[in-house]
Amino acid sequence: MKIGDLSKRTQTQVETIRYYEHEGLLPEPERTESNYRIYGEVHAERLAFIRHCRSLDMTLDEIRQLLRFKDDPASDCGDVNELLDAHMGHVADRIRELRALEKQLKSLRERCCDAQLAANCGILGELSRPTDDKDSKDSPKSHVRKSHLAVAGKG
Image 1 (cartoon, rainbow, N blue to C red):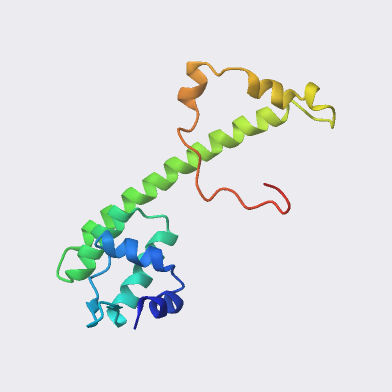
Image 2 (tube, rainbow, N blue to C red):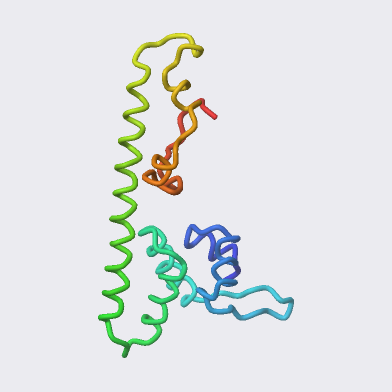
């Protein structure tokens, strides 16, 4: 099947398929005489595996390691368990960061309880103050991806 067919079948964007190929997660497909990529069932199955891992927010390196184990059925499953345990640790860390972020946001929200002029908004006033080093050290280092849903009619 051509890349467009694989894309439709697996509900994966063509660019993503090419990216996974470039990253070595998908095996190189056969090529036609006119140099079109031709994908097989193995590509669809592997792409499903990759997408499932990505849905669990695994990194490409974690997926690459899991694929090595999958490609070597005689390897020790204990290593797979260790990898998953480490990933769960990263998730727990992010949950802690999200809880700290939620606490900061709730505190910020308490600065402005009533509808009023923006000039008098406690939230805007607080955000205008510089943070000290202690605040920035204790706060999450980066924004948590996939944490927003689009607000209808906004931005």
